Amino acid sequence: MIGTLAIDQGKDIVEVIPDFPFPARGLVKAVLQLVQLGGTISGAHPELVGFAKDIIGWVDGVKISFADVESRKFTKTTWKNLAKIRYLYLLLGTEYLLQDRSIIVISGGLDAILQKLSVLLKSFDRISHTLKDIRNTQEEHHVSDGAISIAYSILNSFLQKVIIDELRDQQETHNRRKFLKTSLRSQTADKIPCDEDTRMEVLADIRAWVNDVSYGSKNFLWLTGDPGCGKSAVTASIARECKDRKILWAQFFINRNNDETTNPNSYFPTIARQLAEHSDVVERRIFDTLSQKSSLLDGISCEQVTRLFVDALVAAASIDKKAPIVVVIDGLDETRRDKLEETATIISTLFDALTSHPNIKVFISSRTEHGIQRPFSKAMRDECVKNIHLDTTSESSIRDDEIYLRKRFTRIAEKYSYDPNIWPGEDRLRFLAFHASGHFIWAVTVTKFLEEQMERVGS
Image (cartoon, rainbow, N blue to C red; front, side, top):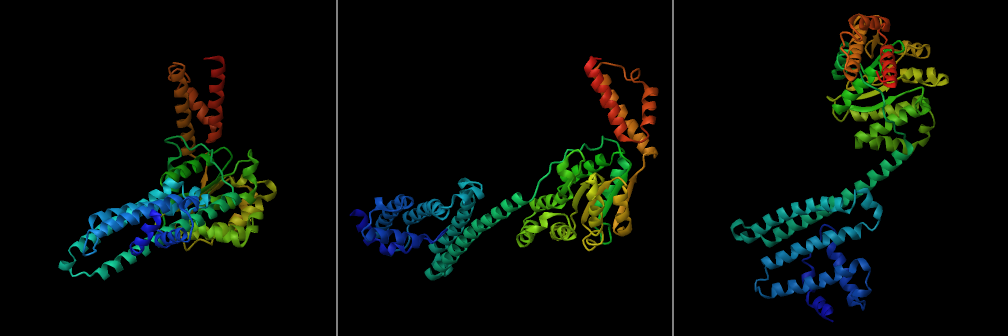
């Protein structure tokens, strides 16, 4: 009975309820109408029970506040009531809008949503306080009540649209990411980078290529070398550096001991997933592509590589044309034997596809297998592809092996309290470096074997 009386007396006051950040005024009217038509508050929808009670109490409170003011202008008490009810709308309106719990999960939880909305609300309050100050001195500023009302109306509409658009964007982003996560594979790199102070000339050369985003610079770098010369270590070093600089967009390390990495059907879908994780623009491009033609995932093809790789890279490159977009593919020669030449041929068709985007940098390492050499040699042009060959007979390769061996033996000597000048001694160390012949894998294998044996026997 008291509630109905408050409703009857407060019909006009309902009109001053802010219609933000959701269409609260319409919702309030619907609740009050429900009660007037014979429904009881306790019989209303559970989510609206507390809401209706607070609304009726608030309307009654605002009515009392207005009763003491002949001019019927807003008082400080009324403004406080409005501020309180705005927070009520924020909380309950959010719950009402987000009845689908998946949206709460998508947005990082209800707390995350309320935090975002709270920021908007604080912005609104700052503007509202400014408008209130103007209202208090409106004669001085010659601002009419109508102008203030229009300003509030515009602000309310804007905030409502911003919030709803934000939630809609989050829903669409969640759908895209869920689809791409389900459709595309991921990969974790496990390659060991170069030891400090080794491969310095090669790494410097590659860094210069990465950083050169000037017109006419080369999009592709093909690092070649004999087995065991340290190609993967160089590749891992560049990948790590680029990751630290936040310019590594994707990496794929092929390992013949891991069957999941040797099937070329997974190469570019896996890379596409990593590209999508770096940018909403790229994510939308890949999502739209796969939504239109999911069969692109069935197997490697020129179309798959063009649409999931080239198109995505072009979208990424356009975001900041001065920032390198680096993709690393290591161990191409470890691709399944029956798919190697076909895969290399498809990749070779890309050499001319990215020339208008000099900030795209694709780094590929492999042995010079015939299945790669043939198609690459046919398509390679000096203006598109830079080739670096790790020569195991070069002075720098032999020196790098000696640096690595010296460091490893020094650590072993310290562990067992040996004098490194006696064990292994300078002559033996140089002898081992000479026999490594620039093959980094040989030096690694020797030191690993000695460490295991000494660990086993204890000295």
